[in-house]
Image (cartoon, rainbow, N blue to C red; front, side, top):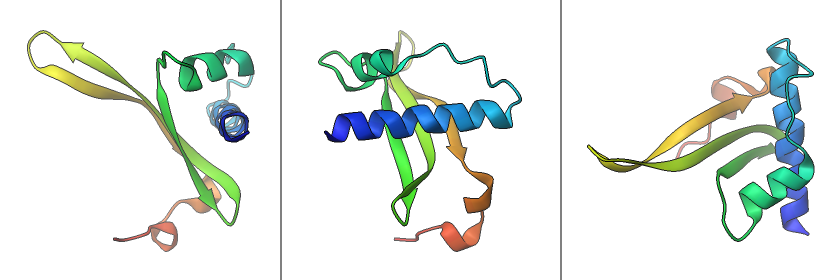
Length: 94
């Protein structure tokens, strides 16, 4: 199931980010929460998984919001790319 695969990759990426930040035990989200909130019928966030040669190398997590002054927008909660995959050789230009 693609949802399960994406969820596991997102969870793995969240864990990697917290290791980099020195907070490996700070995450309390569980797989069930991510599936419900990110892939269920009433999503609370969206995510993008960056892949290179079939492995997850990064992710972005974002959600919509509404401002009474400016209207709708998105909030980028996190953008993470594994250190080994940062730099110009991994940038794909359109």
